[in-house]
Image 1: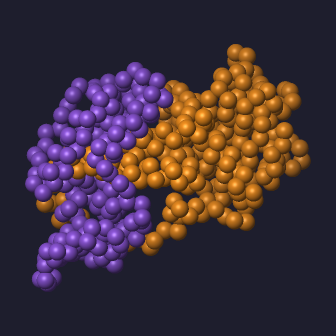
Image 2 (image 1 turned 30 degrees about the vertical axis):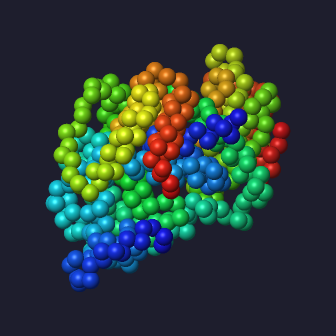
Length: 252
Length: 200
């Protein structure tokens, strides 16, 4: 089901109709899905023909300007991060197959939900949403990104993606149960001494996919947890509904 | 490199007139090695289509010319990263051109306020002079293929590809659910692919 949902994104991707964040997420999926990769290649060959169909004359000055730039434009060496060879830091990617599967499921879910959460916030505060999406995209696509998934107490899934090199983390929630009006899912960084620091709120509305960069320095935290809260407040008011320790093992 | 043998009319001549019958892929090999002549030949082959799609999306000739320059310099810089097993040179370049054009309008949109663009949507057709007699046949094939699409499918191709709308904007403009927009874009492209026999 979710698998089918992500497959339909090939068209929007080839047509350039995904936003920047969705594009990064889908490219994460492409790394491990040969079927989608093949379809994207074919659909991009198709859109190239659509470009051919509207070819126009270009003023010779444009060529002259480009040629004038060549001598001072450095040619880059072949990149080592081609799609076929995802640059995963082998040392940090313990149980990579399991993580890849979970990341894939989350990406699929995110695509299926049409990034509802982000779209909504975007209309409210475009700049904020852009920063948010930029951070999230940077974390998710970082070469040292490690995904730690876990179940949420009353239903749904969540995962924490951490990039140690960026000292940033993203919390992804999928199909979380709706909360009573006014309540939110609050993320917490758990410190080595047991102290907790609020790291951001996710809306308490039902379903869909929510992605949120966490506030604070994730590199000093030992775990990420989530509670349900009324807005405000600096201490968890109830039990954790989600908790994962950051060495990579999922926990209830 | 397997792309088109195309050496039948290879010029024996020297220097300034680099073999116009070389395949795009062969030219790319030379571009990777820093060959300016090969690059200018490749430019001649792709620039009209690059400009065509860019001006469709950006809708301003001066800005589009800037984007064409950016795209072609990106081709020069990143030539070593072209992966022949993933498709043709032309596809690689035109995909980059479309992305760059979209980046340009989306960053302009973001600084201008997001809703403006698709509210002022009256059908502004870009007036373009069609040249490149060589590719007229292709153009006719594609236009024929577009005619095979349903009106709803043509509409999403126009909005998503030729105008650079996101699938969210497509859904809003057409007042259809997000999932429908995504499915319709894919169905339309698959139908075009099958009609045109496009392979990677």
